[in-house]
Structures are given as structure tokens and as C-alpha cells.
Length: 471
Ligand code: H79
Image (cartoon, rainbow, N blue to C red; front, top):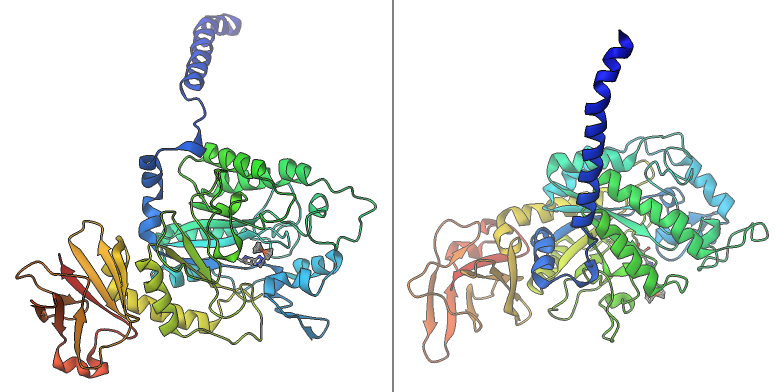
């Protein structure tokens, strides 16, 4: 009986398998791998839309370097905190001891995502792996990660993914190409590997067997919105490596955005691509600790620290003021860029209080001035004098003149914008329209600010104020 039943099923199963296979081959034939390095402007515009409107993101440098926090063997080590392994230098085995101790019991992914979201940040870029090689997720190709090498054993990236989804913040990963821990990457830069005799460094083997599978894990398992490479300037990493990595990742996720440090185009810390005949892979330029002089046709994002280090240093108190940070954000947005502002959490897992305070003030400012920043583009004139920056709404109907300083005589003259006749000019966060006139001779716009706002305490917010001008 049993046999008989089975026999009756054989034919339908065979038919199903046959057509199933047909279907698969068909699909494969119909979707040849696209040439991602040569997409059209429309395709790129479409892919970059959320990123261009996001404007403001949180950079997070976090790893075992937060334990020494800038001090090794009783000595304060100069330079940026996450470079301590190279700068001290700390031998690989001794550094592994820090990694083993990494136990951030106060880490709360929800809290980090909430801080970012309250600050008005739309994305978060965290170091899945920095130059020290330590990984913040359960990588299948190494034990040098948070799950296998520490007693903490929590997948930090997984927890952040869930928290970011909850707050509508896009999770992205910084991933270092240079690796001071991997035996095959030792020829690259770091002359510190103690076991050189046993190993025969082979950087291209590291790329194929380690780096690529790692980034693949990240893209497939965590669906990051951006992969932000760094450490691409070592000579072992080639233009071909960059192109190949870019294609590989866009094939895994066609919507993925990848910074220009995937390839060899970047010129120093200014971060934009070289102007030569080579076509470099990468979607945006990456000025580091600086802001472009003006606008650019190539997308860009300025990354910056709030003090003088990316990874936590216990004694770095050189904090930029909220005033400065808000003015940087405005200047960057007026020039068409994004601002990726860094925090370096402690070894316990806390974002330092001075960073939290500044982010809260930026969030307060953005709550009032959001429309002058998000979904706003760069105006043909992005700046007037030292204290005015312009943005323009994406529908082209409004120009925003953002005042970095309250005008001394309570009235403002603008040369670069003429309002639509009979329109209402408004100050964001203030409920009544402002009086204005255009000086017919000079064709200058004069805006009279309400008298009561001579009193600082009555102004909508601190540090900068946005005028919304219909055009
Ligand atoms: O992750 C943070 C830093 O640890 C990392 N990038 C930020 C986002 C960083 N790596 N290196 N540096 C910062 C400074 C290194 C600068 C140099 Fe160069 C590398 C000088 C010479 C080689 C960059 C590339 C400037 C010229 C070529």
C-alpha cells in the first residue's frame, strides 16, 4: 500500500522539479549582473535620495581602544584614541588582552539610537571593524569578535539594528580595509606583528578569504544603508580591488551606498576624488575634519569629531561648542553636503556626557529649523557675508536665509534673494509674519525683525535663526 501511494506521487514531483529548475534558469538569464560602475544619473539620483535628504548622521567609533582610552603603560599616547595600537605601539598579543576584556555592560542600543534620533540624525555609521581588526558582530571567518573573544557575547550590531529600526534611523557600517591584527594584512602598514616568521603575509589572500566575506556577512545579515570604507590608502589595496569590491557589494544589494574610500580616488584629508582620467568607484567624497570651501557636483559628507579623537580618550576635553557644531551643520548643508558627527563611547558603553549635551542642543535647534535643513538643497549662492547661509526647498518655492548671528540693529539686508510680491516672510519658530521691503535702487531686501526679539530669551532657539522667503 505504502509503495503504491508513493508511486502515484512520483510523476507530479518530477514535473514540479522540472519546471522549478526551468524557472530558476530563466530568472538567471533575465537578470544579468548590472554594470554598477556606470549607472545613469537618474539611477544614482534615485539611490542617493534618502541620503541627500538625511543631512545629519552619527559616527560611532567603538572598540577595545576605549579600554586604554589614550593611556598605555602609564603614558598618555598622543594622537587619536583608536590609533593607540599603532601609536604606542601595543604589540598584537597585548592588544588582544584589551579585546578580551571588552565588556561594555552599560551598553544600551536603544539609548544610542534615541540620542541620535533626538539630535535629528537620520543615520548612524558604526565601526563594524576599525584598523585594530576587532569585530563588533559574530563574524563567521574569525574568532576575533565580540561573540567569540569576550565574555560580553552580545551581538552589538544586531542590537543596534533593532534599535535603529525602531527609531527610523538608518544603520550603516564603517569597515576598515587596513587590518593590524590579521596575519595576512601585516605587510600593509603595521610593522608590529610578532609572529612574522610563521606567517607569510599575503594581502590579496586577506582580501579574498577575509575582507570580502566579512563585508558580505554585514550586507546580507544586517542590511546596512551605507558601507563606509577606510584605510584604503595603504599601497597593498589597489584600484582593481576597489572596483571589484564596489561591484561585489552593489550586486548583493543594488541600493547600497558606498563611500569613495572603497577605491583609490581620495586626495588626502580633503576627501574628494582626484581629477584624473581614471574613473573611481564610490558614491560620495569624504572630507575628514574639514568642510569643503564651496559646493561640489560630487556628493560629499564631512566627518568630524566633537573633541580631538574618534575613539574614546579619557582626558580629551577639547570639546567644540554647540554653537560651533550647529554653525558647521548649517555651513555644510548650505554647500550641499552631509555632516557625520562622531561620538566615542566609553569601554562601559556610554556616550560621554559632553557629547550627549551637544547632541541635545543640536536636536533642539533642528526641531525649530528642520525645514531649512532637511529636503533642502544648495542655493545658487550659498553664502552672503560671514553670517548668512542660504538653502532652498526641494520644490524651489522657498529660500531659507539662515542667520548665524542676530543682526546688530535688528534688521537684515540681503542682496541675493528677492521675495515673491506680497508674500509673507517668516522666521521659523515665530508665529507672526515679518515686515519687509525691497529697496528699489539697490534691489536689496530689507527684513525688519520684531522688536521684542531684541531680547535674546524671546527668540526661537539659540545659535542660529532661519528666515523662510517665498520666491
Ligand atoms: O576612523 C577615523 C580615523 O581613525 C581614520 N579616519 C577617521 C574617520 C584615520 N585614519 N588615518 N587617519 C585618520 C589619519 C591618517 C592620515 C594619513 Fe593619509 C594616512 C596620512 C597619510 C596616510 C590620508 C591618506 C591622508 C593622506 C593619505
